[in-house]
Amino acid sequence: MQKHNRHYIRLKFLLSAIIIVLFNRLYAQHPGFSMRLDFGGDDVPSMFVLDENGGFVGIVNIAPPTDSFYVHQTSVYRISQFGDTTSFRITKQDTSLMFYRLTKVRSEPSGYILMGLGFKLGDTQYSRFTIFIRLDSELNIIWQKIYRFNDPYLGYRYYGLELTNNDFLYACSNLNKLYLLKLSSQGDSITSKITMNPEAGDLWGLTYNADSTKVLANTEFAYYNGGDSISSAIEIDEETLDFTGHWFYPDYFRGPYRGMPYTENRMLAGGRLQWYHYNEDRVDWMISAYILDSDHNIIHQVHRTNPDTISRAAEIYGIDYVDPSIIYLGGTHNLQDMIGHQPSWIYITRLNDTLGVVYEKYIGGDAYYWTNNITASPDGGVLITATVHDIGITYFQRDAMIIKLDANGSITGTTENKSIPISDAIVYPNPGCDVLQVSCGLPGTVFNLYDMSGKIVLIEKLNSFTTQINTALLVTGGYFWIITKNNNLIEKGKWIKE
Image (cartoon, rainbow, N blue to C red; front, side, top):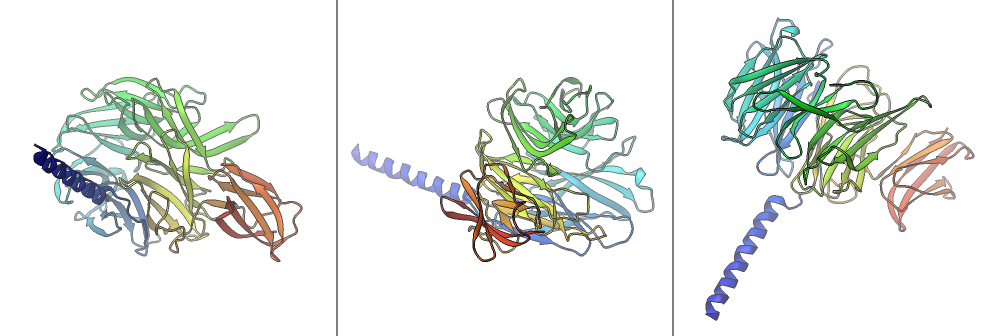
């Protein structure tokens, strides 16, 4: 009996060891990477989702150089956990096609559904059609379907969702209508619905509610009746597509935003906070996240980036998680127009399950960046897609940035990275004058400012948000600064006072 027990224990230990090895191979933390795609024209990464191997599948739209209207072509990219890429371009003879969205589907054969717009070359763009392409997990085309709606709609105002019965729901919106189309897993039309204002609004996504019993269309201005409650979730019966109710997200919460089911029948939402202070003639712009209970009350909330600088959540999805204790929230800091004349940053923060800040990073600051999408990774890291172009250019020509951070917010596994600037803090404006802003999410940090002779001229304890430092009494010229925590160097840089 003891001999059998020993064999059982050894077998149990061996099986446990095998499981641990397999788990580590699948979900161990992988190093980060970054890539800049420059094909000579306007190159824009869009939505990326997880594949079945812990990597990513997504869309990059590429337009050749031109001084007229851009006609993008779509390439589908697969990126491994280690940054290896493969891609193929989607083309159709005598037709312009561009895809902005894709959805992962689990019904057999598992894979993805691409959603896009197209028009015959020579036709007006207002005769667009909607096209769906289903890919298997190896990115082979299974089927493609074309549908036409009565009205053109904005290119980015559409989303898809695989339903619990394996059907597929598609939604799109223009300025005053919301279209719903339900397809079978083979792409055949089952039913559709069109609704007008006040029920219609600007669409920002499709998802399930907290207990996965109803489909939600996340909108802006649907059922709007004045006041500060602007973004609403429309509850949809997935069989009939009837609207069965609606509720509002917190005040001042606006698109781009994402609402998604979280743990314990809660909802997780991340997006842009645009808070009007009417009595002060001032607007706060921040990137925010909420955890809501089953009655849509706020349990936890977080608001990041400096409110007096325009910040905006990522254009497609600005919040995501795989492990509920590792939530990523991201967007753009110092957003301007489509063409920027000042530096901007990709902003990303890792949050815990109470929305406490684990770390935050400012990526860039050397050019004009605009964040499009973030995708949490099973290894605890995050994939970020964005565009970048030189400051002050007079033509519309962007490069695609694809960045994978590990669970510690690093690309190389160390605190240094030479391919793209990544900082725990930013100091601005630079050059500056009477006030210096220091944004740092790490608690217990200290800002030290030195003149060029090495003499310290300012010491300031930083809060975990943005600290304003009065520099009016400093003479004009160059300075260098360091940020420390427990006497350990966090960041360093130079600053010029004009």
